[in-house]
Image 1: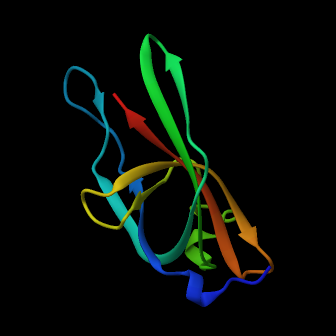
Image 2: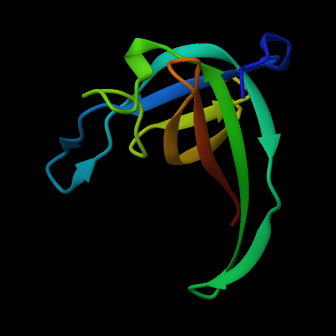
Length: 121
């Protein structure tokens, strides 16, 4: 299924945490680095709610598709992985999505990112 350029009508930011640092008491996450801001298609999935650790938590899965890029090749070292995240829309107050899986579409046509947005308290 070829990637339709007209469907790439959303901007997403792909981010990666920097190395963690020890502040004298504990390890604190490093500052997130923006790997890229790219055009993508966005298809929301059905959400669900569950009770976890006496807390209501809702999950909202989504599928993002972007053009293939050598830097994001999921099979290459340093490519996109579940350690990275997507911010949608691509602005500082955009929602964060944890990446669940990254797969190549066709033969270097695109990359499909399945991610989950955590909402709730």
